[in-house]
Length: 374
Image 1 (tube, rainbow, N blue to C red):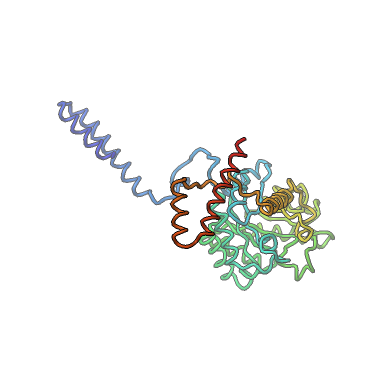
Image 2: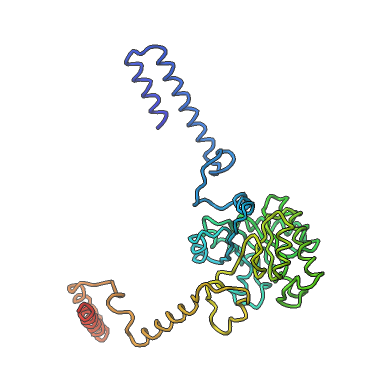
């Protein structure tokens, strides 16, 4: 369209007998138009808001970036993180304007019903990641590397991390622990060009060694280890570190020692941000059987589980009493003429009882609709 307009401009100027100066100006405009078209074509495959596009005003609908998180951290603004495992929860997290959406391996317990995070596989995690990526457009998306996906070698770790980004649609990965092999894995993944969030303190994938879901940092040696491990992960290139189930003074010390954000979960108020599990903070796990899944440190901002239970009981009762669905929730109609023709066809087929049932149901629906309108 720009080319056509430019050529038409030349034709108009030429037909008017304009001066060479004006023709020269017109030619310059055409040249600029051609360059614009060429540039737009060459750059059509370049993502928006990259360094190629130059500075752009901040759009709240854009994906949160590591740069934005660093800016928040530098300003002392708290970073909000919530887990999500599927499309609906991701949409809720997105709508609330949460900074980071973590697709945690806690899905093993919360969604799949296991007692630990160990059973969930990388392939299962990728299903959760893809669903979340479709629902959360604004938060930075971080996918957990599950147990068994990165322990064998740095090659395995990098390959798994690549899959989380390429197949799962995540922006970054999270891995647990601070042993030398984990530090090496984190460094290798960062060197492969993938952002990494670390995780120290209570690391659920290591419950075999820890002896269960036990808080860490409660004695001198353990507290020092939490801080040193967090620093080692920072040195490996992690952009943030989760501190789980450690005393607030230990979390405060780690936060002070690091120049990257700390994200607390059961670690007190002195971290750079906080993370909670979606189902936990909404109070969805109300049944006594699931009490063990909801941690002591979690504040329930709602009791959604009670609302869900109440709704399901009401549904069961109405279905049992045949009061649902009524006329309002039976919206699809058949005209009287077509109904009579249908009944006639049923009778021709020898289905007299079916015809009687159809006629009776039509009368009942009409009667119910009349009562409802009164």
